Length: 157
Image (cartoon, rainbow, N blue to C red; front, side, top):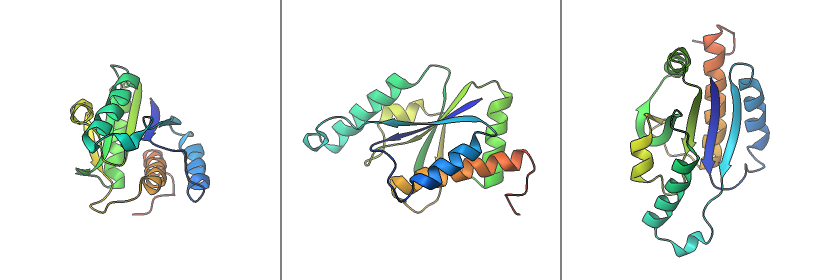
């Protein structure tokens, strides 16, 4: 199973880039992983919140393949423990899912169409984090899940 980490917006900021790159490299030992940064639509200041979410959503839905398993990151989603995340990854790998996409939406969230397309909505926390930090936390947690699945020492209970 491949993992793709999608984020709408600009490139990784310098204050998180080394961490994201390090954990992505480590995660590749368990799952082939890559980042996909979806550019925000041009002239975003001209759109209402709803229009912007719709345009971003159209891009996301266009880029998804029919068999992709979409995990939407949203503070209203289901919280998981690190062990629970590892179990979700294993379950999807066991069901022959070829690609699992983790989506960090735009500044205003995602469209209703993307919410409906998502097979799982995951909340990292009840707290709201800047998208740049979510990228780092997401990558680290997926790496942690990989070490849990291989019964390696990184995760302490």
